[in-house]
Image (cartoon, rainbow, N blue to C red; front, side, top):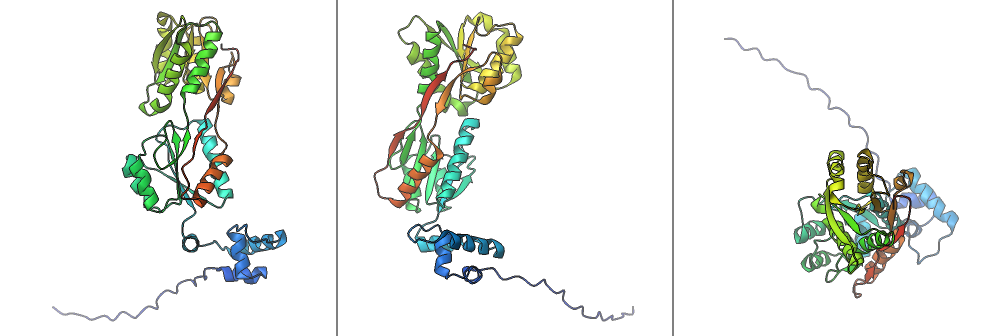
Length: 348
């Protein structure tokens, strides 16, 4: 067998596109006509040094034109800590009211020069979740709900977190606490229904275990409001599904209820629609009250009575975080932050 050797001519290596150099603070200073120190003061929002507004605008414009972004890691080294505030994603469904609150909080923190990172920790709980959060080395952690314990707080602090803030029904040793006692929501709803002459009160209990953090205290609040009165409280389980509401409405008259606190406005609207389809008159046969004071409740007919929930402003919480970061060794603060008032409309 004969072999033929074939020589393949060498091909020139493809030329790579010229990479643009990464802009530096020196470039920004040159374009803006200021010192590098001034660039640092402006872009790091340093309030200790007075910089004129025209100079600030010139520096920001130069940074935008050059595509310059401050190096977070370098800034953290200079400061001795990061500017990252970690917000673990809530394990419970967040309704419109709480979503608005968290959006306002993130905006307020960004105005204070913090970077807010939301962390999805599905499958992680308690101290195990705290170790995962600590790996990111945040300067502060805001923990909604419950589950974090003192050991988890200690893990976060050893990793460099200067502030750990919990938002829930109980305080945790070592952490700042924003206490949210949802029994006040149930007390308001129960007292309102009692004042309207209702004595056989149902309380919707969502068939979602993750909502028990809110639903159980609200049920207890209704019981507190009706305690010692000639009145009864009946738990009414309900899944957030049209079919489940329709099935409940078919047997509604057998429950003998003259009022219902429907957990929140969304469950109230779901139940009201099903009750009206079954010919149950609202409020003549059954008074209905929700909670959260959503806009849609005002558009229903009859308009939905509700419990307006008062949360702290995002600005107030952002200032607490900033205060805790600046004074890391201070005694943890505790604030009761959940308020509630009844908004009486036609459904009761």
